[in-house]
Amino acid sequence: MTKILEKVDLSENVVKMVLDAPAIARKRRAGQFVVLKIDEKGERIPLTTVDADPEKGTLTIIFQVVGKTTAKLAAMKAGDELMDLQGPLGRPTHIEGVKNAVCVGGGVGVGVVYPIAAALKKQGAKVTSIIGARCKDLLILEDETRSISDNLIVTTDDGSYGVHGFVSDALKNVIESGEKIDEVFAIGPVPMMKAVAAVTKNYGIKTTVSLNSIMVDATGMCGACRVAVGGETKFACVDGPEFDGHAVDFDLLASRLRMYMTQEKESMDKYRC
Ligand code: FES
Image 1: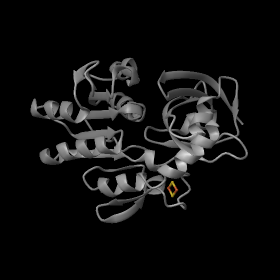
Image 2 (image 1 turned 30 degrees about the vertical axis):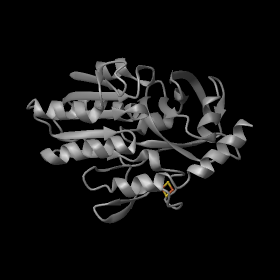
Image 3 (image 1 turned 180 degrees about the vertical axis):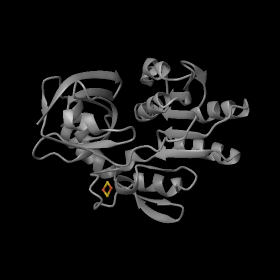
């Protein structure tokens, strides 16, 4: 059993939890995820680790309520226990040798790119972070991201806070300002990652995207996280979750993400009734 030590609502539908998980906290590295199961009958869900404190033995996760299981998880509180927590899983982010990076996060993806930005900063890289949301109320981790960035740009789609527009537009401005960039890390909704990859491809800047959001059970067997990368079939939970953004077939990925929408809605409707 894993105890929930802290629960904070970061925005509408986005929750941060601190878990008592000393073994995972000792090993976890940026980019890796855990798989948790709430109870005996629950499904396994993969969630990215946002932070860990090896001394305190705590692990921080951030998740968005997108279906029945995440809604049940969001309804839990500090002191409650999860039946199972496995990890760390997935390949850690390759940050070795990166000296000047731009970390781009959209929506709940800010919670995934934040630990990568923090790890880059820790190894001495110059970090420019660009974080965005649909509106001010949905923006998460602004202060935390500012604290580990040399430069922070905030965007909102509706202009209610920061720069009016998309993170991909802000990235284009950073690139055109002449900033030397070794690599861009982009994590967020598929259309956002597609737009970022399209911008950086024009300038020949290496770009890494994380496809953790398409994983279902992270077993390597359900096939739900299948993705075409450079013409080859890959599985996000086994081969990723991070891939070369210029090689991912985002259109195929977007169509696969829509495949289970009906079942997810039915499950959520039943849970709510
Ligand atoms: Fe099922 Fe990867 S999430 S195979």
